[in-house]
Length: 204
Image 1 (cartoon, rainbow, N blue to C red):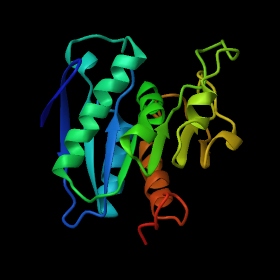
Image 2 (tube, rainbow, N blue to C red; image 1 turned 135 degrees about the vertical axis):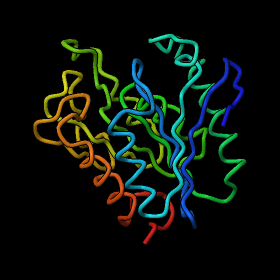
Image 3 (cartoon, rainbow, N blue to C red; image 1 turned 45 degrees about the horizontal axis):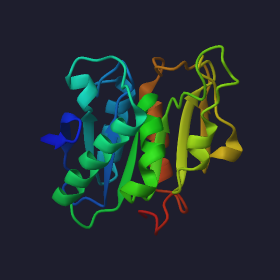
């Protein structure tokens, strides 16, 4: 599904659940794509619990850029993307998320998008070796509950538990979740099914 935004074309790859109970919209990091193992694992796990999943390639990646550029423009494009996907899936609770830079976008835009929850994978708390440049405020200001899944060896740091609704730190994992990406999917699905994970009733 191609989506026109104020800042270029985006592409959404949508996997539909037979009788969907939510719409999860996921996106990639600055230099990666929607085929990242953890994003695929989350897709599979959420489909298994009855969620439709859209994996979004943002305009800057379709242009071939490795860096997203202006956060304001990236967020504007993201809100256009989510609005188009919601129009195609009316009435479904929205959960949005992504990995790394995509997790930051999902947090920054959660209120404006009307998301009921955010899934932040490998949230880059700070640039490697620069803990003074913390991005924790993006988590604190997200609005809806945020699940953060990070590896304990992530050079971008690990957020503080008090800044999230739920923090899961996976032992031995780095920024890419190379050891056991399926575990990431299991964590996300379990959280979405748990009471209090979303602002309305849980899926159960």
